[in-house]
Image 1: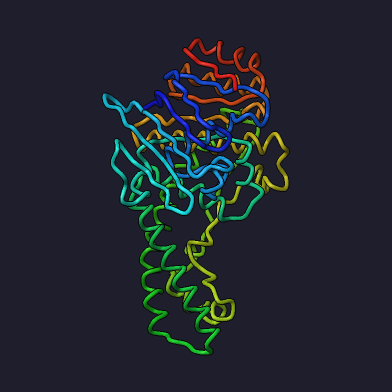
Image 2: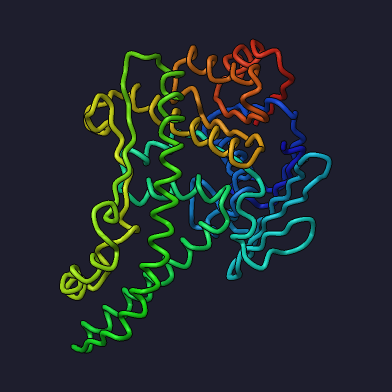
Length: 359
């Protein structure tokens, strides 16, 4: 699969802009603040119906405008797919495939396999467990629509249970029967989600370790560990045990919504003991593992977005990374950088066709 062309209207800093892309390598170059990352985010938007860098949809509308529109033409095998994403102020976002609007935006996820590597990925290390869960869920959901549906149902039931706990506290009351209805739903959905996360990580972790070795060699040992309340006890027993605490806190304190991924290097947390270079390599290895996992599961080579990649890695490692195009590991690649000469020197060595867009 590859993106043939894209048109932007009132998207972030673009009033009206069209790009026609090469099927191999495409580079957006220019000064900081000119819109290179915005162009990549527009491509991401077409795959996931949301931006990577700003989850508040209305903030992607150009200042003083009433809507934005993104349209992209993808070549998928023998057929073209026209995908559009639009938003008007005060209305819901609209995603269309070949002119037909999706009833549920979630039904679109997985159609366009895509992976982004960006300096913003550092949040996976420095932020809380919710960021790491979203990463894990995002990888699984691209090839498992049922997982995404279960996850959305779980989060809806969780919100309802939390609202009931708040109601109990506010009204000095308690209704065990109503609470049990939500418990049963959480238990069933939570068990399925936990099982799929565990199965996913059994396959993903070796791919990640191999990706890190490809980046830095064998002299550093890294690992990734899945941590969940459900590893040590049944979900029903956990909910029963935590009931008094949940009533006091007014939210559900146990469950798969508290799962985490532990990142280590040499058996120590990389957040505390990893150098800046080690952390960057760790993050790139995570994303390469994501790329390879999705490629294997979907039998489709994902589109790869490399945002400001020279900020993450030195030139030799960037060259090594881009060189994977020659090994047919990568398909279509999009790169943003501030220096056109630096970028062109690296991509010329791949001996692949490319286009450079100076913004």
